[in-house]
Length: 272
Image (cartoon, rainbow, N blue to C red; front, side):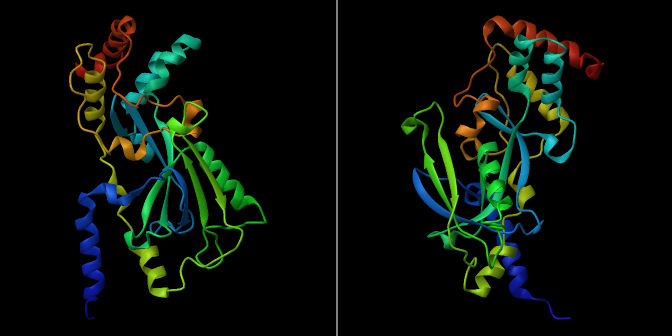
């Protein structure tokens, strides 16, 4: 059987381009933009990809919870919360990972940039799923009878709340993903390799990062797993989950000793 050299070259180019991860993500800018959700090449029947991230200081780390693995930072949060009341919950909350949903999209007017991943929080996810569940809209992701989506983004500084706002609205008319069959084939198969976009740290690496984060002397917090500005929870839908600060912040001085002591207590047996 003769090799399909064009397909192999396309795959090679796709892997080479993984070095600049920012090209694999799309983030709305102020005003209205139009996107089309594309079937995810790795799971065409469901393009909504749920991932969990830690936002501590100015670092963003992928939570192993995303792949069903133990997460030492979340475990520490559970330890802090214990059976305590509201104060314990508030102290523990920063250590629980935040859910983000990603979908592959083509941005209208920027089709030459190919498929990119759009990340959003709970409110946008619920809105999109509600449209899909509405018989007046149906499967808005279908490549033949789906719908483009208008994304209306208001940045934090121009919002009437303390958070940026993202509103979504499907176009009233159904339309194909593209009239060009070759483009449809390209967009549904030639997508960024998803698992290569996020650094997967080991349990011990995340534990070490947490220990450095809790250091009151302000030691370096280690490598980030993805650019913070790409997936930072700065939209309105994250309000109920308490958005992470945009600038590096550590626990208040008055709580550092107690939190550090809790860390030592929880992980002491691991170091024996």
